[in-house]
Length: 416
Image (cartoon, rainbow, N blue to C red; front, side, top):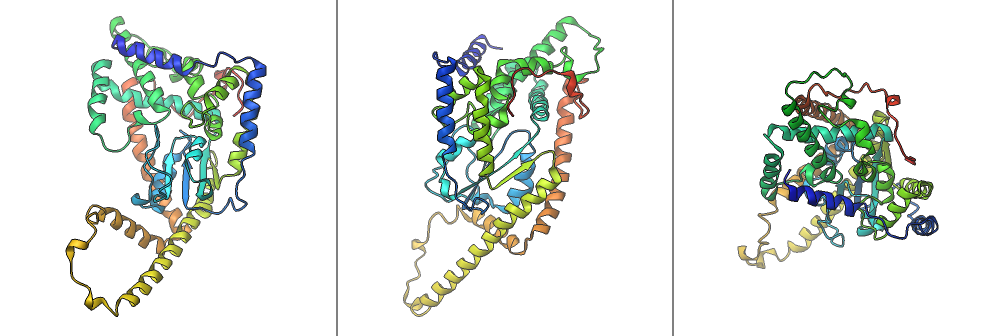
């Protein structure tokens, strides 16, 4: 890796983990309690189970959220109704409420930028230990895709060339992968270079989570400061709004205090539980089928109902306007120059919206679930093929679902 880039990466990591000078327990206890008290005092409408104008999908990484997005939400909302995804910064003006769906890895602090009275929040949670394994595996899986390059410099330059003109959002732009993947990518190249220098090596271990010749061992990964910052208690911090990607001004100090004085994490947990209780829907990765059915009945049914109501209102308004205009329509001049000049540019979006609205008129919860089942099967096959292709580059470190959790000791106090 280029020495300048390595130094820059080191400085970024150091700065990201610098805590306030005054972090003694009494000070930290006051900071955390004040934040928690303020957060717990925020009131939510009594009709919290009613879908509002904007749906905020707080996507916790490695919980199966991508499946919900592609197999549920993309079928319920047209492209034109989706807000520009933020990930690293807010990309739309919340005051101009034209979009209806925001799906992002941003934490709960995003609510400070949204119209709270008009926003419903949904999320999915997963067993924290399972999620750590999945985060570790996915970090390596994505990083391994770069091993087609002869060296790290070549891989880094390729990313730099592609991103300026790329459409869509790259994994390297998304929290927390924009931190975790480059870290694993550098590590994979370093281990590959070491193997080349040593010549042929005989890997006798069968445990892919402790195959240091090929990949960073899981124990080393979870004990690294970067993992402590981004992965440990990740769900709790994300739901509370305290990740290193937070919009809350006090988030950095609160997070640092909790990381230094573990017992203060109880206050963060209470805030996270309150936020979950105020959400429209909370699913569980482990109860996949039951959670998906509940999502279709709680969220899907309301989106479909809203669309039908809005279409009915629009048709009534259009008929009324048509009736009022018919008496003098012959006196209006035919002037193409008066037409909206942006109509051609929005044709595709309008068409997409109209097609989806037409589908919603015949959509039911049962049909939504049928479509979901077909979509998830196809999506899983695609993901499986991509995963196998990526992991071939670090064979025999091929991760499987059969893991003995007792083999690893997770250090530190966990409150999620």
